[in-house]
Length: 372
Image (cartoon, rainbow, N blue to C red; front, side, top):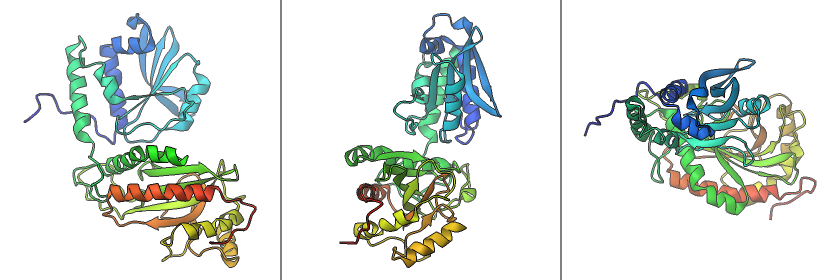
């Protein structure tokens, strides 16, 4: 049955977050009462809604609400893009503590915020529900149509979904994000049992959505991390539906990550070498059909640990073109999966890798180990 509500599929494309913020700001202006209730004021007429509020250095906040010239709410909207953590930090530095801070995200794609973050995650669905019964007919109809749009625009994912099964009409970035969000949500309790952290993340590109699992290593300057992501290069992934996209399949990089590092100058390759016996003990199917190819000084340091007996499959990571492309300094081993692997299989593999993360995190970086 055709919906009596207007379709918003062209007005609110998943790839155009600014249009979502534009329409939300317009809804707030048309009926400011829900906004006033959120801020905690009865005088909605005193509120001013501003789009792309300037912070300096070319940075802007999606929506800022002011009262008598002072910011009382800062709102960042998210659809497909990852959280801009530096922007949040800039807002925290410049705005008063009493200013409300919110990140609006799709309910099935939660915002990964630190436990102590002053930013409150709110789903688009929750925000729109506050406007469903607005006394302004346009606001009410728009909110209902918007909710319907959210329900139909996102690709579906469950345990039977295959990684590569992206329909022609689906936005590939959205499909990858929905898959990674499903994995992260499904594995949340398992991660808690293992004492590891998990989140869905896009890496530096904003398009290669995947899953990150991590735990602090025995050396507090390092983490043991797993990145699961699509092997296709970012510039080859379309951002809209209607373009044929066949994923190459996911891979998982299991690595020693140096924390708060911007270059690999001081990366401890000998620490990675000492993890070799534990990598060997955990599984025997590490990818090894193509040699790692780090660049610059890392190539020489990798050769050094291989000469000292490190497994030949170690060394993938930053500097190796097909990998995750984060800003992290991380090297390790990787696993590859078929394009048609199901999310259920990936869930089980990631659960197993949580045990590997724990085992690697317990290795003393100063002690030589041997495989059992």
